[in-house]
Image (tube, rainbow, N blue to C red; front, side):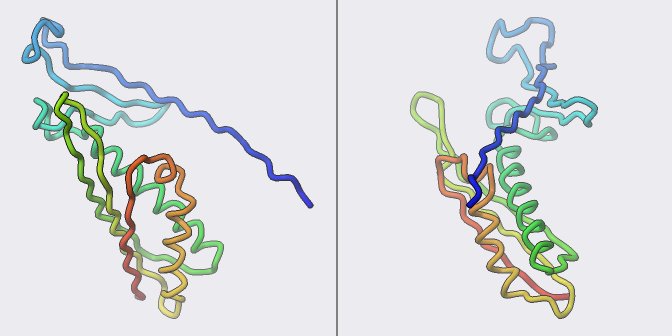
Length: 160
């Protein structure tokens, strides 16, 4: 019987504030929330806060990036599991939605996120097995397993 091994994986990312308009943070209204998210040799992701918090709506905010991380992690596990099961996925899209609640002290937290992945499998593929693989993908998703709120998955699977 083999002994299970646990491997640690480390990740790094750089976030740089680019919103100093000349006065720094001398007042809440004196600075922009603009920032850049970058990794070694990777494209820069333009970030800001949500417009409700004086942010730039044309840039990604941390809340959207959280949804994107959950959605991408689920998708990557699902594609992996389908490949292992011999199911050929030909298209995949997700529409993720989250609900965040603010607290009286100005903080907040997410209450829930719902992923709505829609996968298309090659004609003749086992759509029912593909649908059940969404459950396994959700169970294995590193990001979903790290959340302290409910992450729901409402998948649809169709054939070409």
